[in-house]
Image (tube, rainbow, N blue to C red; front, side):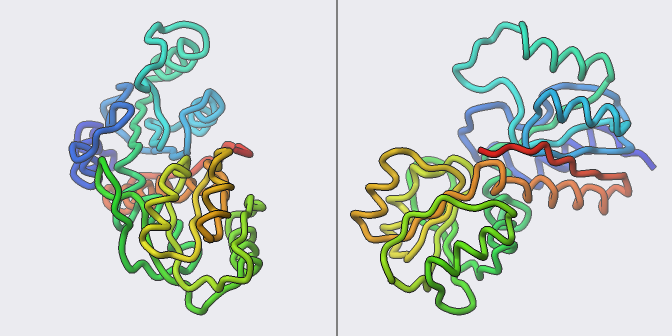
Length: 253
């Protein structure tokens, strides 16, 4: 049986609590399509390739982490933005997007799902200013070397991370935050961890890691954020008895 778009969005908003976040984009329904949903496609970013793939898969809605209408971007509907929106509207394909709320959710979020993938036991969060804490802290089953953690990341995410090592310091505690969270490295280090994992690195990240003596792993923005949206898609499929398909549009960043 199909679920109404209204009920689907209401359930997502109840689950992910977007009102708790000061985000860089609107969370929730960004583009309205069909009123009834039989199939939902999930993906990391609402690129043209994902929109086209969802249309080809005969989906009624797309659920993503990175949607549209970001703070500070050109507000005109031209060029690339026009083509994306035109495809969604012409096919009555709804777009639902959740950014920080999808990172932070304690069970289905990107951070929780990455911790699960890497077999880390979550023990807490690292404090930081702004929204609810996005940085998770946990422990591997046994102390690891930097080489061992690098190999685990490589095997689980199917890509080689950028690594800055802190010598032979054993890794007993790890902090992580998916995506472009290299700016949280100081908060992670202040929490007393041995290693920090995120998606991206900036020029200064290397120096901070070296000078403060912590192992740092940049495992890819896209690669670290493939899992939350899949978990939420599967949750929706189970609750509403609709079809869900995750479509991974490869991105090396």
